[in-house]
Image 1 (tube, rainbow, N blue to C red):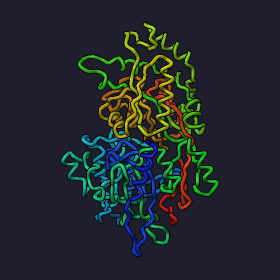
Image 2: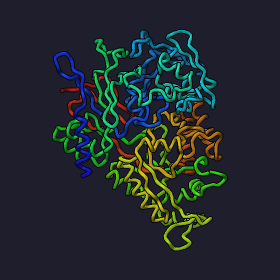
Image 3: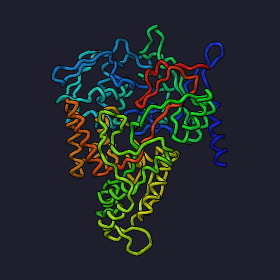
Length: 560
């Protein structure tokens, strides 16, 4: 019954309307899919990929990184200069930039965006990345096309940091910032067609749990050498399909153009590829990290002067080391990723060749060692009921969360539950829809343990919002006023040092040290990394996927 219901729900999406060109033929639309509805259309306050994936095509930054060469190239800024001492960066915007509503885009919009990011009433992760030694960057605009940034000290990842900032329209949002309601603007209840864009597309329509429609921004600045507007593909459709199985079915039936396959899909897709029905390309080890982490947030566990014992367990290195030794990562790779992956050891992925620490020794699967660690630290079964108790007599029981519908994570949780149950820990599985899960992680803090992932970045400082104790995405205990532990204070110091060190060899050594501390203290326990592939229909032309994104994506075309 469930299978037929899923397929029926998917087929309803085929009735998506399309605007027609002269002559009655609908324009071609690039059809993509996502598992979850966006939580917000406000890209500054978004913390989850369901939102950033939905809104990302609407906004450009000053510069952009080529995912193939990893070099920076101009975007809204046509050029930039840096002073000899590395403290002043000057960006010159392109001439005649225009927002999608026809209003000129100027340096005042860049300044406004920086004010939004640094405004304490706007919760966002950009502020963590755009601080140098804990200080905000100063900014100034001498004219409509020039923006100057002043840094207290040289800042090695500056281009990476600036390259990730979506520039916002001051003429639309300034009044909301002044009124203290910016964080609630552009929520999903607003008309998506009212969002003013600087990027390649505008949003036309959003139907919750069904689809988002986009059309090419008529005022977008990019053109090819022949004067033809870019991107070539005029329209996009983002299908919201919460079942990975249904997404795969829709792709193989030709209803989705580009698909990120799960490990279990690879074999069948290769067979379909040999028949010419799809194309599939291996891109490399995932640049992000999937991990298990435990909640160490006193704001959740300390109430009315009483401390929940779970806070002590989850902050205890003995407990965490035992968990690490009990996890069978080889079985995860074989049974969940079907051998198309590798155990994850370091926080930074091997895809990031420059900064990945290759010499860390993993916590090998060793249940006997895990049990011995627990016994020595006072976690024992005192009454013979099969469940461990802590030194104060509290049974070791907690809830394990992940996002429902992500079958890889659900299967990882199943193996984790089995491994921890063998140790004598009672684990209750609690899958939630993705947006509800994110709400618990970053707002209510009502969770015990979670299997989730972070996307990776070429520049490790872009993970400052995760690594720093003050970071909004410092997931195990976010937004600390001061570091809760000495090792978190050391990571804070190293993150600042890594950002202000220009010598590349020294920067690598600093980020290796950070990975060593994370490996020792285990605030996150890395699980596995999939070897990634991109699959697409033959009608998609000029498609060059990489683990870091699509190369020259604006030149993609579609055949009918």
